[in-house]
Length: 104
Image (tube, rainbow, N blue to C red; front, side, top):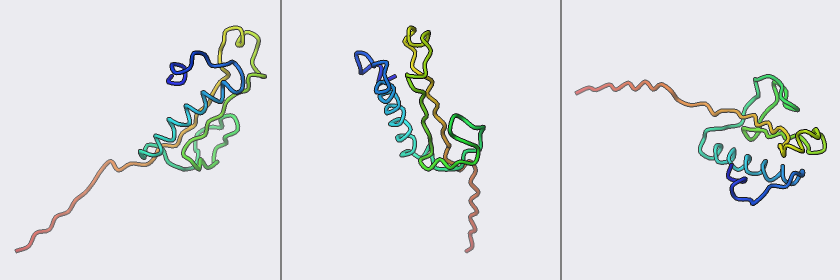
């Protein structure tokens, strides 16, 4: 959304799609930096070129279609090609047991 707000227009070219992907990548990197996403093995169904069992070394993978593969209807409607973002959530501690032994 930020990239669309910051640009007067995003060209309907592969370079335009690259701008959108870069914005998504920046958001994903922020999520990695705060510990929300982490590297891991993709256990979900196959998505585009990502297969079950593949490793997401950065905690996410972004895949975008090409403008060249869009239908005339999508181009006329000014739709971007589909962009797939597969993320791996970082594990988190949800329960803590603290044992305190006191002796006098």
